Image (cartoon, rainbow, N blue to C red; front, side):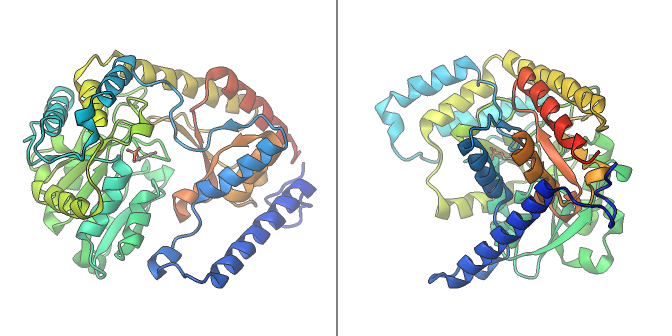
Length: 431
Ligand SMILES: Cc1ncc(COP(=O)(O)O)c(C=O)c1O
């Protein structure tokens, strides 16, 4: 067996070629950046090229070669949104009065705030003031990144478990705050050890990002964890930002709790949601934040300078999604649950043993030992080039994601089976 993980191995030519291509790509990018007439701001320079941009390029090249690409890279839901929501979107898009700027306090704005509050009461038994404790967003990514701009000064620290959804740390960097990574790992169930943060760091810390069910590791958290987190946040006067994008995606266990179920949580936390995942509506860009009213007021203030609100037809569609029949959500979760079982068992059959995800619609997989000398980007590139399967390299989720790749189960079962067959051939390359 050729062990790519040992120094004395002979690297297969396909891998050598990939390593060379990636080195050249980085060099080309650096040269291009240094020659630009209009240089990027330093805070933007601090961010690398978005990994999905690199993957998109690789995917485009593979497609140009005639490869039938199976895209498990981005968490871009493939299932259709509920028909009644699409019908409402179309109906409202046809009404001329919905083509003006959206206005604070207008009819649909009020209805959407109320719909979110009712949804919270129904799902989590949390009572929210629709006017002050709910803020609709142009997708949760927008709100999460703007929140760092709204709250961080250059000497404020944001505590970010790592690996995580990249917007959590990139938003901090863009806002010019100080990023402090808290490594999370399988041994600690991918929950941050808040006690590990030194007092000197805590004194300067203003924000803590959490997100369970967790992208990319698929970990879940229970109410006890949130209770401890809220008590800790109150003690240290730190705002907990809970990104709850995958609230419905839990398998084999109890439902995922909202942090706001903890008594007193709204004094120190805000929670973010999205229609992109549960309702399969990533394109319409609709999310919302709930919780601490002062924090939401600051987020609304900064947004007031950045955007002009949400297309009213989209807001009506969101009202329909949150207040209408919910059976489609369960169908979506069940579908991903079945895909998860199929995919994890398939990987196991071809010799790649990965833990079964507890939540989300991802599979977080440690790169097989015999390929462990490769970076996650190199390994992901290998899978695109040799198997036509796109996956997300773990390093895109932060330095502690290195050594892993993430599969998004956003293709139907026959395509997932085909992906397994193709991946099996790549794994055999090192035998
Ligand atoms: C954890 C997490 N939060 C937020 C988002 C962004 O969602 P939205 O489409 O609402 O911007 C994603 C998207 O993948 C995500 O994984």
